[in-house]
Image (cartoon, rainbow, N blue to C red; front, side):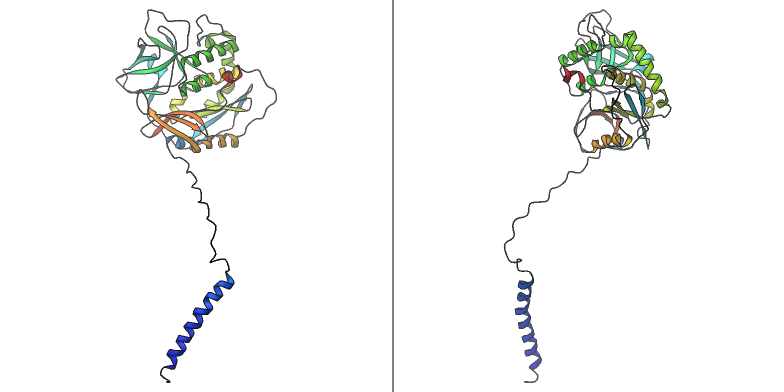
Length: 352
């Protein structure tokens, strides 16, 4: 009997615990055994996109703005060198006789032959003069060496389709942001013509053939462009890779390049295009001046944009930004060559 006593005591302990434990659990946690209401699933937050456009924009440092007559320009400098490749611009290549631009026989495209050993960057909105009518490049194109490419264009001279000379040249001009935004959306030719007509009226530019280039040919406009260029000349000493532009305190858009050297050869025509946009508006004396932090927040929205990739007539890929930010870009071998962002550019189309 004494030998069995430890076994009996152990059995009694187990029995007591088995009774006491449920009682303890039930008294301390009375709702544990009751049916619980279903819990909604936790939302899976979308992760910010990390691609060549995001890498370029987030590598930019926003500098102190320069102001002149309602136009504010924030220079963007790169913290790291992202694109060390050498390009010709369209102006460079034509001036050197390294490239031919000629009629294809069809209004919405021209034929460009690159005879140089370098790639040629043609920017959306660059104006081509001559042929049967003046055109503008529809989208950014990277023209490979030794190749002939059919490049999509818009007509920017509605009232002419004639001329024995089939070759087209450049005069260093770029259409204003509203037109380039329409091009990025692949707008119809009629939409482009309507924008040009509205722009000509707004700037009192007269052209029998409704030619966009007439805006730049006007003597008053040339004086205005010279004035703004002088005011913003200090920016170019900073060697920026791009700019964010504000008009009377509102962000109009941004142009950013992976190559500081490529931007330096396009910076004056880019500035001119934003000056043309500014000249559509009457002067405003009092308005809010955005600070650097506001511009940084604007650029930060690129992380939440939606990206659509497509092919281009030349090398690389075209990228369309929508949603959190509107824009377009050209990338090549995983590096963004050029990014355009559009904000308050729909002046004429929305006000008429």
